[in-house]
Amino acid sequence: MAETSKIDVAHIAELARLNIKEDAILKLETEMRSIVGYVEMLSELDISGIEPTAHAVPRTNVLREDVRKESFPREAMLKNAPATVDQELIRVPQVLAEEGMA
Image (cartoon, rainbow, N blue to C red; front, side, top):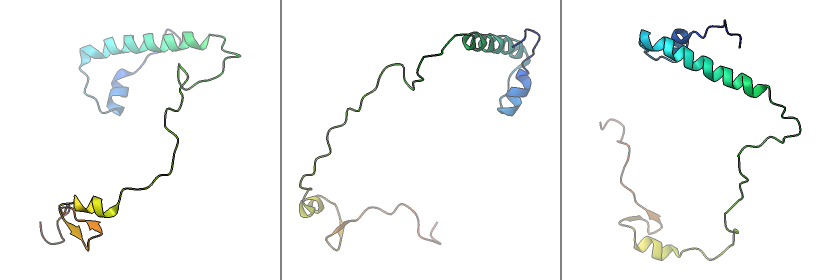
């Protein structure tokens, strides 16, 4: 970024719907210029031969093997339910009001 380029902090704040005081705009512009300058400095690095990565350290899957086993018995599960429907479904409290009942 050329040194003469100006970052329009007021316009960026307006686009982001942020209310920034006038005295903070100059400080933010200086800080944003510093950030953009650092990114430009990074773009000068020779990264040929470096494989892109998503993480700084290798990640491995720590999940267990998916092993099929007998499921929990329905009768035992329904025995713990406060209420059931036809002895096969768990009744839960109503979440949404019925139409016309608000």
